[in-house]
Image (cartoon, rainbow, N blue to C red; front, side, top):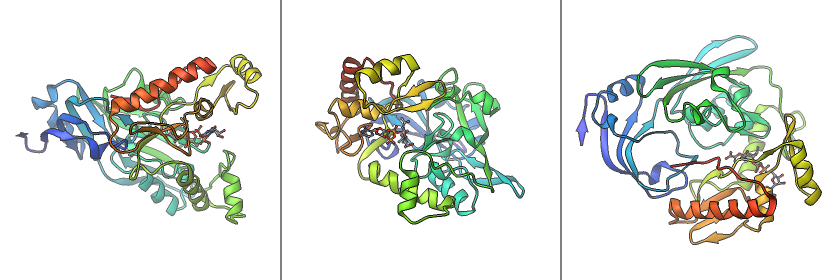
Length: 343
Ligand code: EPU
């Protein structure tokens, strides 16, 4: 154990409470950051020189496949601040450690629109831009203004605007060139007081209609999204999971045409001039839904969600994911790419 004035480093910390898959793994070294100066002080410690290092948010998009041999930096930076507000919009900055869904509720309760379709996504605000979280036809990108980040090596602070983040489908520069290089401290979003509801995805409109919401507002939309998610996706508090395990493959129009000739029932969504195919459908067709190998399984209501039924290891889940990838590749000639961060 070592202690510096504001930085506390622990050894041999169980990661089970800190990953939504509820995988048992151990971090050799562990520290928590509640404000920017904590990180600057941490950089002066011997523990910080240990490699590898890993910045952990809510742990809701990660699969630990082994003990972590270096330092885990858990981000707990709190706070939501209104930076500006007028009759049309409000610009809010949230600390990276703010629970995402609490931020959604905070905004939605005040009638600030833009986050309602992103209700109930597990995880913390700082991780949201890394994979440009998305659901029900909306991606974080649409409300994003900027983020503050500190470079782990140099300690330099940079403000990344939307262009610098190079957002894509479940993608950003923080999954590519800047992977593992920065610690995001806060995220700034622009929310609207003149909502333009986005109801075109899946059965969102039907659920609102069934609930009798004839003139829905953003609270109704948030409620409907929560209802759909709760009916399809397992609660990570009860059953370990990390949401969608794979990204939905995006195919060229030609490639999709070929696929739909062979498989006329394949569902699809437009993605610019390409076509997105639900990975869940491909996996479902291969018969994996509800399957289980030991404690690693595929959720019974949704084929894209891998679950830990109790004591699965990260390896068990990875083996199951590999079996799925192989089968989908053989049957459809499509390579599934994990959405979850495998460590
Ligand atoms: N489907 C099946 N079998 C299943 C489940 C779905 O065939 O077991 C087919 C159906 O045709 C369905 C289609 O797949 O219409 C799409 O399913 P769903 O609407 O549940 O969406 P998804 O494409 O599987 C994506 C996101 C989710 C997000 C939903 C809703 C990705 C990787 N996943 O899932 O995000 O909540 O859309 O917008 O893009 C996450 O990223 O962790 C996540 C849960």
